Image (cartoon, rainbow, N blue to C red; front, side):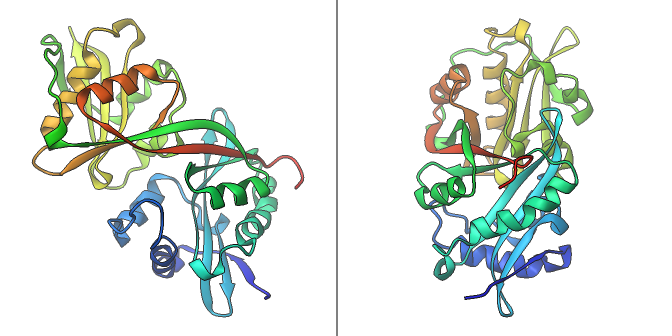
Length: 293
């Protein structure tokens, strides 16, 4: 069958959301909680470029899409696949590869070097499709969730830590604290682009910022939890985590932490000790756009 591919416009969003719901109705992870405003804001956070994103059509029906985000990532112009969805009866026809091939020349033209995406490790069909399109696995992520009844309050916290709200400008100064690059959706640039509410709490000792936590209420997610290298092992992360858990306890049934690099054993130990449970693993995959397909 001959399918039509086209670049999208922001005016297509209502149709995209409807197709998103159809495509993710049987997804490994329940996506039914995502409403129209939530997805729209998430794509703003991810810096989706509609005119670089692709829709695939069967006559007048949108049957699949690939939403492309762009940014300077690790020092280079980079793209990120914020979402690829294909309605169930159109899967297995190579449509993912067709959309990637369709967008590739446009990305090359503007100097994009790599295209990244994330995929659940149990989604073997999607992984196979992405590998066929030329993607390679570059990192492993773990995801966790806490229900408040399972929260283990710490035996002790850092009583000297003063916690107060800070701005994105404040945490931008802390980029050298990262031991590993956050995933695209958890980056400081993504935090800055959040169009709705975000909570950024800084921890101070004697007036100096020594740690911070970013919480995004719309997705009930801790996006970043970071401590200055010279202040670690002083229960600063434990204290910040306890503060945000207590702060939102009456507003949500649970808190998620997504895309922790599996090499970060200290953060994983912190979360596990607090009662967070492992939910899924994800692969970060990358395609070298600079090379010809």
